[in-house]
Length: 126
Image (cartoon, rainbow, N blue to C red; front, side):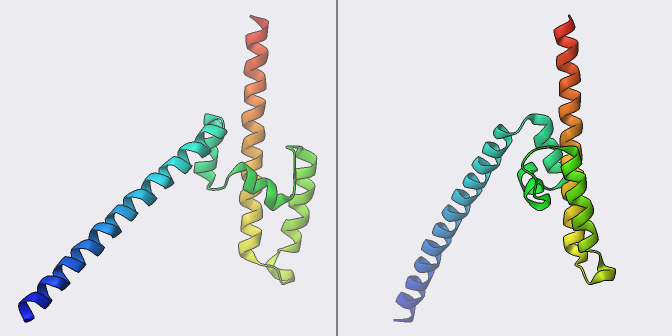
C-alpha cells in the first residue's frame, strides 16, 4: 500500500510541476509581448530613454501632472512638487525622488524631440 501511495504522490508532483512550468512559460511570453507592444508605441529613442531612466513618458507626465510637453509647465509643476515633498518640511524623500526622475524623463523627451525637429529641418533643406 505504501508503494501505491508513493506512486500517487510522485505522479501528483509531476502533474503540478508541469502545470507550473507551463504557466511560467505563458507568463514569460505575455510579458515579452507586452514589452514589445510598449516598444512599438514609442519611438526607438524614446523607448531607450524610458529603459535608461526607468520611467515611461506617460508615467512621468502623470507624476508631474502635465498633459503636453510644455517646458514652462513642466518646470512650474516640478518646482512645486519638489518643494512640497522636501523632507525638511515633512515631505517624502521617495516622492521627491520620483518627481526628480519624472522631470529627467520629460527633459530627455524634450531633448529627443528637439533633435528630431533639427534633423527634419536639415532634411527639408536638402
